[in-house]
Image (spheres, rainbow, N blue to C red):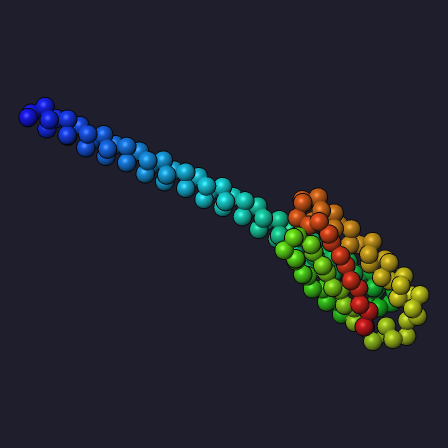
Length: 141
């Protein structure tokens, strides 16, 4: 009888030990997994902040390039669409009252010069593997 009680107590302790160990391992695994996910999200957020800064710089570069054509104080609006598969599409609208007096050839030259400025954003997105395709659409209004 005494041996049976000792065996029962030892069995209970063993079961409690096993359950406690399983819970401990599970908590550690979930903590490590959550920490790794947090690090990846932080890297992504930092990268997207860098992209946002490059986009702001690009708009300023566009304004500078337009001033070379005598289009000082032009309105530049840039919108970005990110598709699920990682494609980035930028729509850039340029507003200036003197654009009505600019010939089609000059408008094409302006767009060509602006496309050359967009290489930094495109290279950044493609180098980091964030985008498979980066498209820029220019509208001169």
